Length: 398
Image (cartoon, rainbow, N blue to C red):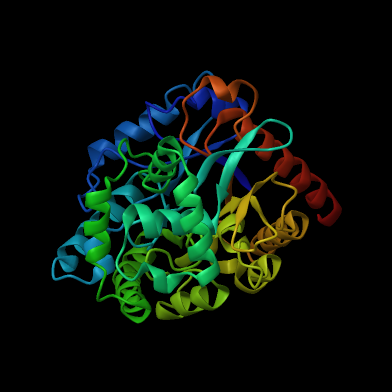
């Protein structure tokens, strides 16, 4: 696998040299400064690419390996009349990226929220901090802070009653912290949502259910997949995180069946998957090694992390990369076998870019204000563990 890490650009407290010293040869980044829906120009792409490569003459080489993400405008997800022009802009951004040799593009189709957690600093037994999602906390936010209409229909009576008691006994600081966590902006964004803005965004999806969102996703992929094929681009959708409906919003990329329907909507190799073992692994019905075995040719990017489902299985937290509920040994073995299959088939692209995802905050990570889950040392630990596992598996197979 090609070892990479996500980098949020010049303002990221984790430097390119940090990535290089961690053993990365690839960088996963995006042009977060460009408004969603606008075309990524040759100039902006070249500036970022040159920044990543500027020290290659002196140190180990880095390259811009994956775009994560080329974001999809909400009007495309909602199927509004403006989507045709926005899709044309997206196609042009793809073409421009390919012209600079950047040909793996990760995107997602989650409405409004890119991901959701309720605790960004959950303390582990060793004192490190990680991310956690608690269904009752989320219900508290939805029912008593956001006060979304008809939210009570999405929660059991027990969860509603417990959330009410928790709300009555929570401090103002606790409620504020929960609100800020749920409304956190997208990775790389500088601002979070406000409650008023957030409710307005939710209201725009009132008439959009699962079927409508699926239809809009399939329309989108059918428009951009041919452009990807013409330009040698590998498109890879990121699964829903967490993989279930939230806040009345539909989710349509949560299961293997969802992935199959999407791949069938544009049945070409370029229409592929970001294989995120954390997002998919929250659901026990997703067979992670089996997904690689059955759909390996469509996996163009891998996020390797593990989550631990708790006693209340609606809750989960990020676990050490080699622990948790993901069988990382079987997952990595399946990915290594897929790469071997590609080599034997003389495929043009045999390496799968991989990044360790959602590292703990640990050691000197506490001295840096990084985006939650994107610490330097925590991800370094995860990458080192995955690299060791991969090396052992590869030596036993090749």
